[in-house]
Length: 460
Image 1 (cartoon, rainbow, N blue to C red):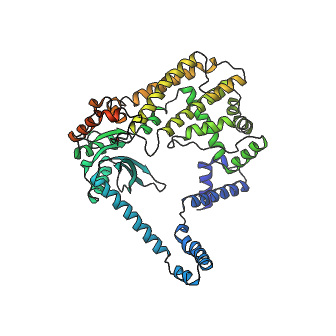
Image 2 (cartoon, helix red, strand yellow):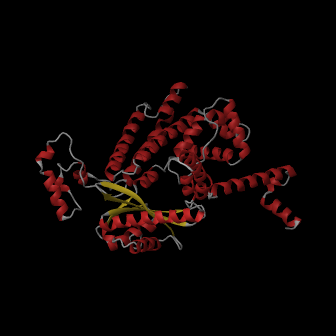
Image 3 (cartoon, rainbow, N blue to C red):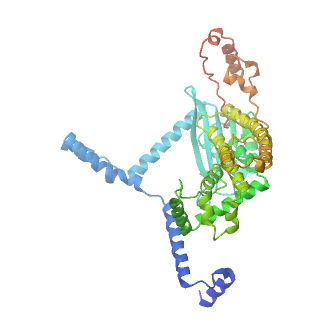
């Protein structure tokens, strides 16, 4: 570009940099090149896994075989093909074999599907599907497919991808008894959503909204006071983490002050555990942060010396740690909607108990807040109203998002000897088998009751 145009761009788009010297722009350019290198190193995929067998493993195996067995055996071992094309072909053969085995199982058994539409690093929309099904007396969970959505991520487009996969794999929709999605309109729309289109193929299908997604939505809302604390935390983290020099200097300061950590964590809305971890790390390094941003952000630094603000930060760190624990406890390969609903119900009850105890000046369920108040001899009244208001809204949001969580009708799954008359969704033969089991007095009096063969397949 012409120098005049460059100068005009600098003066109109970056007026703060007009009076900067040449060294400043050289540092900016170097930072930009380093960012490009880091991005390339993160996004690049190394071909080492395909070549390591030929370059390292095979020569080592040949030497070992020659020493331990003999040259003839080593010569035979050298003939094993391990080129890139051979390894790639074997990986594809194994992948196709795993896929064919999974499809064969789904053709003869009932299964539940969990769907999630996300965007990869290249900006392409990807549809991910997991499947859960009974096999050899246990509930199995497998990865079904991941396919790119070439058009718009509408309900019709997503359903067409799933339907094409089912048709190609010769899997019947009648075997799909449950489908779990997030709350996006493309998934749950009444007319053209994926769930509505799937129920046209199988009206008996059970549709559920992912409980992990519901929990994330329920815990997202904050009062203005607590939201201001979170916004300040994110602003401070971005101020330090976005500049390599700032991060380096902050780490050096933390080490000099004897802190247990020397780095901050980025906050990401799409990662459900991020909020709690970021708040926890900022609370641990609050003294170091106050010292570091004293010159650049004196107003924000003053907040890190305000007892009420620090108490609110400690509470946020505690409550989001509890939410993270809940989120982790309801995950797992064999987690069912029964176990998840029990934990959600317990957490909903805990919020009411916590609110009552906070109103009475008791904060022992929030350890970091309690330690801060006791150490500085601060009464709990300074944050009592803020915490009580947040716990009340948190309980209300959980009640709103989990109104349909009623597993009493599935008690026969936990114990077939009680409430077996409430069994629903079973075929006539299955209901007769359940009745035979419930009336078996020999099994009833055994010290250890057998685990029911009836598994709830719906994803949580």
